[in-house]
Length: 126
Image 1 (cartoon, rainbow, N blue to C red):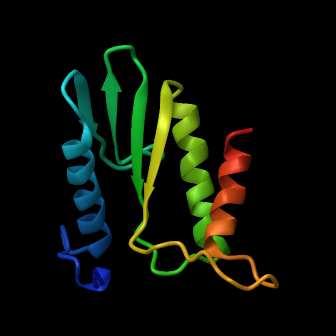
Image 2 (cartoon, helix red, strand yellow):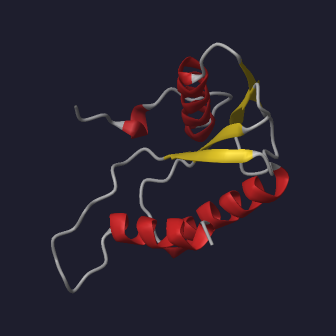
């Protein structure tokens, strides 16, 4: 299915806010019984919303309404991950929502978006 993310319904006049709300609603639907769902406001400390489970662990979701992933967008994602880890020490799972699929890339001379993502995840896990 090809979704035109540029046509997402704005919330408070902003498509970015509409995307964040969509992601939060999908996250809420994913959270099962026995978990407490928390929707955060601005600033969000790297997490739009999170689920807190009976054992105290958390799963957080962060929405980034980026249509392209260049170095400045990657830095924003890095900051969100860093903030989430610092402000939510019980975080055990972290979901970043993007309005695009990460290309695998078939060219050996070019790093794909998926390669860049995997490299960053490895760094975050250190």
